[in-house]
Image 1 (cartoon, rainbow, N blue to C red):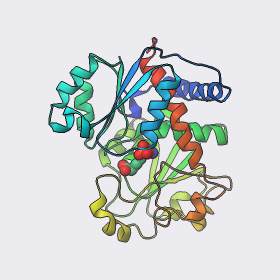
Image 2 (tube, rainbow, N blue to C red; image 1 turned 30 degrees about the vertical axis):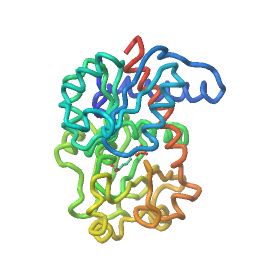
Image 3 (tube, helix red, strand yellow; image 1 turned 180 degrees about the vertical axis):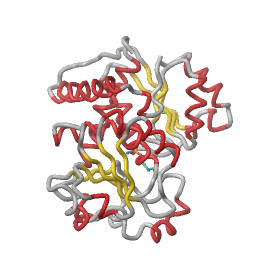
Image 4 (cartoon, rainbow, N blue to C red; image 1 turned 90 degrees about the vertical axis):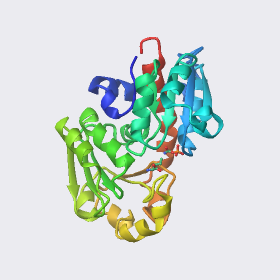
Length: 304
Ligand code: CP
Ligand code: NVA
């Protein structure tokens, strides 16, 4: 039994195989060829936060693989009324074959995983969002033919998305450059661990320096879920960190623009960029489905 709490839970071989299988699964689905590899399996999906893409991609993904998914928002389970995380993990493990969790503290996810006896998947915490990176790398592979040795540039908040880009750098072999405003840098320990693992990661003072020659330029909202009260302050602090056409012109000529979505046009990205020809955000969103189906097979399949 294996959990997927961060990208560091994958070996480089598993990571490469996962992207290859995601491409295959996408082709099968597009051609209408059945691929019910998880027949009879059930996925429990615990959500403490809102979601569109993550919920739908896991739920549809399980259906397409011949299994079933249950949406368990904490508003309507005993978890939301204070039943201990450990007890919920033990109970759900007796009934389902895998569990995804979207929650606030990463330690809640880790505690759940310690007590679960089925694979647990991180569907986003305040610290990381690894499933999104799988979809983003599948998108990069489709558009640029490779992930290895590509340069990914992150502009904006040192948040869960940037942390996951950091965690994936060594395993997938891309270079990562980032520029974050003062006071919004990524977690120093996570950065040091990702670099110690072999990740080629460097921070820059300004977006213009970080973006230079990049193959992918990516960003995210300035205030993540749970930080809504900081929105006004962050709007001031992030001035100059919008991804707009002028910034994109410093990246490679065929650079892709990525965003995990939901996006705020006119804040972290201009409409011209997100709705423009370099943007691959809709492919990224669709690829959540295909990448997670490969992940589900890896963790819940009979070989998992
Ligand atoms: N990108 C992403 O995780 O979207 P949702 O919050 O809609 O799941
Ligand atoms: N950083 C964002 C990602 C949403 C998918 C958040 O945590 O709200």
